[in-house]
Image (cartoon, rainbow, N blue to C red; front, side, top):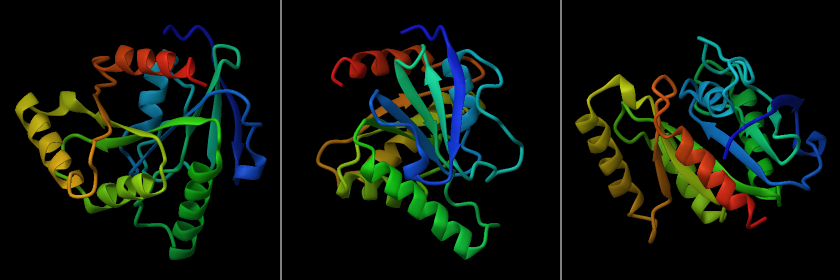
Length: 199
């Protein structure tokens, strides 16, 4: 798939303010500072489509982008696990995220982004298991693979898979990406192109 047109559409504080769910939709979610906005920009081949920041935790709303003149939506969801937020704010954001994921009938896949530099984090495992329990369709994207040796990336992915197998009979689809080198970008776009046809 080639992205010929991508534009910011709207930022919504709750699911009832989101665009009508009448076209295919893909969400991007992960811990704060995992590289969601950077990956979205790379997929769209548009430098400033999604706002990036050196400060974690900047995304606090549901951000929709129109791709190829409303052929699909991409959604940048708030990152989870940002410790400097208040407990009340953390609870509100989690509720917003969970409500969105459980109730958007046009959501074909939630891409869960994971920093490939780290061994499995309990917060990631907990969220992925929640998605499995609630039958949320997901794929895993391991980001920043250019930041370390391939052997370390593969070791961390293997450890992650081993943790998930405690609760999953069949593991989610996995992508390996580098927004700098462009690794994995065409594979993700081809996946969306294929999945769109099932909508």
